[in-house]
Length: 346
Image 1 (cartoon, rainbow, N blue to C red):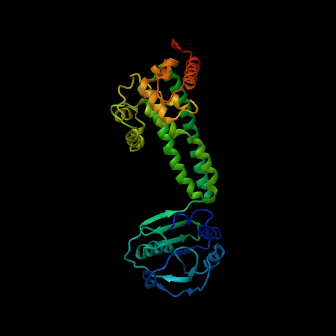
Image 2: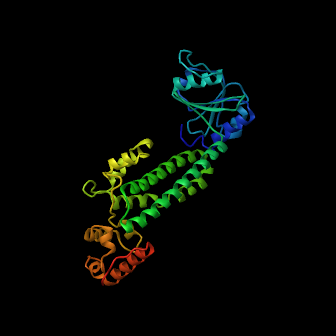
Image 3: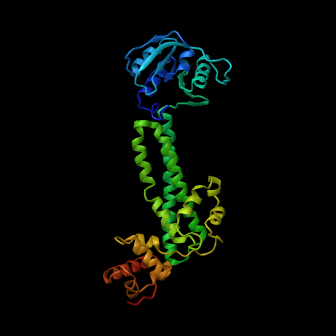
């Protein structure tokens, strides 16, 4: 079945919700085939019957199954008696649900069963069975997850802020860097999961998606810069391999700083990790990425970069005298803000 046919707001979902609310019950087959014809008997053939939720609800008042076309544009038949093979094993209880499961297995079509007592909606896709949840339940769960993402984002931001100060002081350890990477990766995974869940809200997902986008804004870029700053250059020519390694970790593995340190070659954990300067340079407005690389290539580390004189900065290709002075002033401001200073000439 098309993934979007049963999300809230879609005609088919509105129709089955209407049936569930009225507790009339229904058996709905999506699509038609020769196999379905063989196990069908009786019923009413409908000509040019456009699908509407209201029409589906009215036809559900009859005892038999309803057949709609695969695109849910037309209602083809109503009050159809279905006779699937009893040899097909099923764990479903109740005649309607057993029939729905067997019909789906025998015809490879999707079948929806709506309980007349509880209003529970189950979707059978051969051996797969899914129970549809009310939008309010999904929204409640998504809102709880949004709170978790918000807390994770605040912890990530706090860790990144501390990282910046310790980098300038040249006193950050491998473990502290790895904890920033942990939090950022976790935030990305949580956001992806909640987005997938929010898609089940249909038209109501818009606001949730905006909130998630806001909460994860800039995280990937920050993580990439942290990796560029701290990954050992001898082990990683670029960060792509490291990003793949991290994404392949299970949640249990990601939760272990030791394991993360092993795959990123950042051991021992209490060893000082010297930044290269990419994140500091990224915060300087208007400086092209190629000049980031040139400056890092010239000075090798953030401490060397922060102590560079205006004259030395001017020696880098692409750095004019005016930009060299601006960079020096920017570095001085950073050092002043953390109460640290280098002795610099001009």
